[in-house]
Length: 118
Ligand SMILES: Nc1nc2c(c(=O)[nH]1)N=C([C@H](O)[C@H](O)COP(=O)(O)OP(=O)(O)OP(=O)(O)O)CN2
Ligand SMILES: [Zn+2]
Image (tube, rainbow, N blue to C red):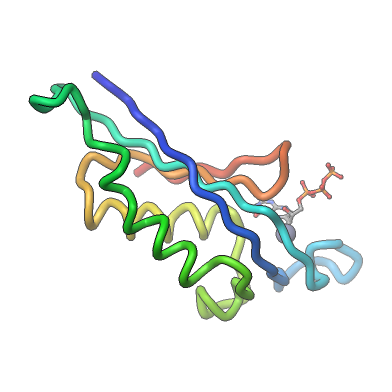
């Protein structure tokens, strides 16, 4: 089995509901997000690729247009825009287009990663 990954980045604000009042993430704040998309394939195409990284360009354009420098509560339409919810959103979006997508990981800080892998 082959596994390839590609990372995308954006900056955005969010405010998480349902937390204790003294939880810092209940305040409006922002992160420099990293989104890592993983694709798997048992075989390679004639070019030697699971899929050409360049074919993931539409995901970069969507992130740039709809997520970068936006407020994630508004983008996702709810008040729980956690890293887990973002990983699920990007997985669904990417897997609809590229069936080899096997997982998506989202980082909010240099020390944290959330992964969605069905
Ligand atoms: N399981 C999750 N926990 C938290 C999420 C999340 O998306 N999923 N999000 C947050 C905050 O939005 C933010 O990411 C803060 O995280 P935290 O690790 O607490 O960041 P700090 O830099 O303040 O942590 P240090 O311990 O100071 O390094 C919170 N939890
Ligand atoms: Zn946060």
